Length: 370
Image 1 (cartoon, one colour):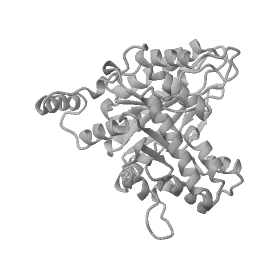
Image 2 (image 1 turned 45 degrees about the horizontal axis):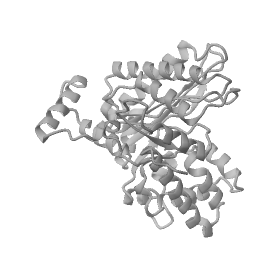
Image 3 (image 1 turned 60 degrees about the vertical axis):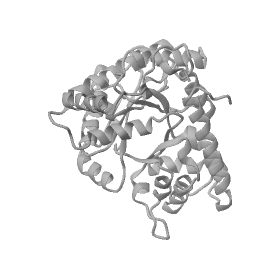
């Protein structure tokens, strides 16, 4: 691929230069070389490796229940364990999946034979991640906007997750574009501040924070409006991250792709989505961030992959980050449909997972052909 497209992978020169660069990176943020800084940088870069992305399998018990209902499977611990073991034990998963985000139940889950559910992921070299937020609540004083809770005891939880092998974390904030006015200043500030507090606490305990300010597709706004608010929200997040002393080289961003509202009369092309998305990111995301792992946000599997592929085509200007995926539904919908809760379908479901992972790995390289 075009060398200017992936400058993150350029040779950093000799080891002495690299060491000096590392000192420069760390000394601005911390007064002394800091316990986890090198590990955080290594983890963030490993997750952003070319042709790879994240499998988001961190559905809460309620959310996985909705997915199971669609295939006629009862939502109980045994079925959740069986399904997530199917994902973990997929041979060859590590070829296109660099990290997996888990719900707490899965991270600690034991199989009937006493092994850990996550052992399969580890064997494939897939880095373990953990969802650490506690869901959204209405933000008082706003028109139905939301804030995310979960900062209480986050340091203790992160410490525990690190001890059992997790190396990155996810926290989802939700932003709504209200008709005719966009998100309120209150909601933007709340999102940015909380994401920055979460990120600082994670890094202090050895976990790479995925910063996720999701702008919902709900509404009839056009593409230009979505681009403007994405830019503003992400820029606010990096101001807050800087204020909290977060080491950007040891973080990842998980934004929405810039898309028109679900009820917008105009439907835009994947190349228009890509131009709007890349422009918003170029104006708001520092070069220090190694990877941008997009959420699928209610797009179909195929649309999410086509839009990701469009983001990695030539002609969109300088993109110093790996533009890749952190997909939940867009990696698992077909997998669940193939599985249907039946043992005899496990192999077919795993093959489907590998197919979707490869499609999105190709899209990260701009080589997806359908």
